[in-house]
Length: 333
Image (cartoon, rainbow, N blue to C red; front, top):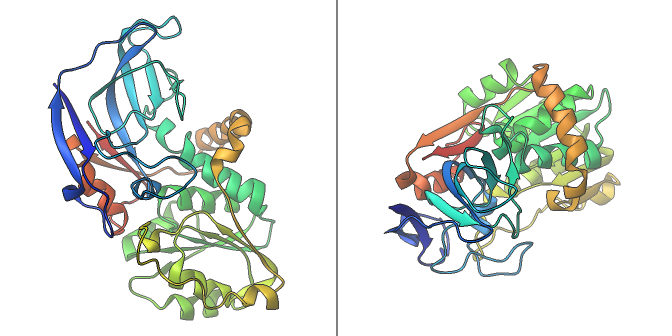
């Protein structure tokens, strides 16, 4: 049978298993021009919570009764498509299910990943996550040697890579993460210069001590109070990049207030900019080549957090907003 999680109802606040329905249907067959893929790993990112809201966005919301959308990597086990052979590995938006019959087209076309190991890397460091860190930090942020860069959500899949990219460019990098274990990892493995534990320390006090009025670039994955704390410590001409806002829970209702200290952008003559990696799809090949080189040289450390079992998909998504993941959150089927 093909086990699936369908969206049952839209969450108004925190997402949980009650918003999804578990069903088991017959395994589909590959139609004309299609392949049948057996999913091996699913990818989880905070943006998936935003896809559950019935509001205009950069992609349509997941429909009620639809298989929950997510990226996955899997093996082709049946093929009626001239470009794909049985036994090949592919990645695409295959959703929370064991199997999918697909032509390979759609919102996010599938890609072969036969030569990439570990097979999970196309779901993060060589996928949307890694490319988000790359284009946000390298193309937009443009960190310079000697600058001070702060990254929030620094022990997550995107933040950890973004910070390491800034280090490669010679910047002084400070990461904000939750808990002593994550902060220790940032210092000992991800090569960050400093780490601030927002769960056990005052972010404002630590920023004042480490970089008062000297933050040149802020790569923000969190928003909320942490964004406000950073705004009061910007340097003249600083850049603030808005990559995500996980502190909001990505809900459609009861959104947190905007930054109180936004006038610091005027005082510091700073800029604040949001971005989407989908605007850079045509530039992926060159960026991936560079990322491959850095990873193979050991210049970027990659961390994975793997949950076992499709039954845990809803709680795995919810865990992202509780700070449970360490590095890239994956689920093994």
